[in-house]
Length: 218
Length: 218
Image (cartoon, rainbow over all chains, first blue to last red; front, top):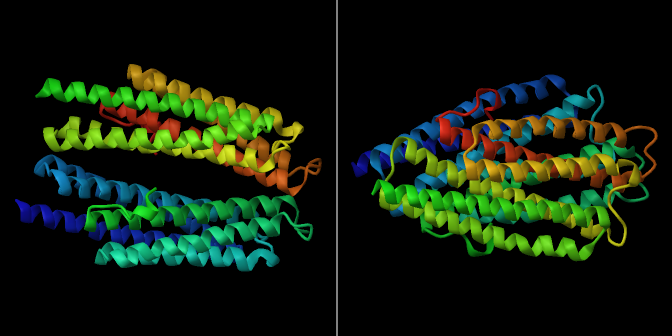
């Protein structure tokens, strides 16, 4: 019984890591669509999101069946519930990539991000994508040190967001209101992807150690 | 055993309804701070959020103890897991109210929302607050009809958001980039509060009927 439980739990974690890969592609492709102004890539991100939703449903079904049939208690129970929360957050990261792709699509044949703020937006996207990639490893390896390191990247994201506001609101901003609104919302979407990445990483720390990282408690 | 389970479940729902009241106050007060440019009210929203976080922790503890000690299966299990998700969403609605309050605080002694767009932002806030109030009743009464009606309000929110973009991006917008960015982000926050309200209402439908409203499936 215990062995079966752990096999099934392992398969949930494999699925979570696979969803993380899908999210990584979504973030990378949405960013490519955004920075190239490519409607086709944007469409691909939007339609691929359905697969992430379905993968989430499969994980939820497995987790419920595990809870129903095995009735885990204490630590095991918390692990399964943590997995249910992780899959919700991963799905949300997919949704946020879709929001990025939709802004890209809305501005085609133009590019939503003006040249002068491109380095900051581009770096935000890189940080987000990197965090998602590392969360995938954290899930696969259950690596607490790597999980805690994910939160460090989030600090860079916060700095980038502040820098983007400084640019948008400076007297030198000549790109108008539309571009400013787009960049503010894009910043919000990448920031939320990063927040969720930290949260998923923290749940892995919890699963391994039984405690959330104190400094990071959300 | 069954009776104990249902008593404990009932107490979880009472707690969820109480948190919903706290969120209702948070949304209303954040809006008041925003539209009056009142830093003191904004501070109050920000510090009161800690109480919502603590109330969430209490609900989570009760739910875990219920799962551990009673090992519910099938429908009962899904109800407890739904309650865990509802509390996460309610807490998030509190966080979003804090975001509104922080924009208000940032602009004091000015008011973040320019007069010409005040009717739209003000209506967004009303819709959000009304949705939260109705979700509280939905939780208390387990009223499926009322739950489905919450989703209707969300359509008005989407329309308001579109109208706000039309205003921000029109040639007549004379309030500059900063106000436009503030209003775009405020619109996003109220929209997300509304989304979460719909989601919580849908979970009540699920708890009562065993199915999510098809048209509303998220």
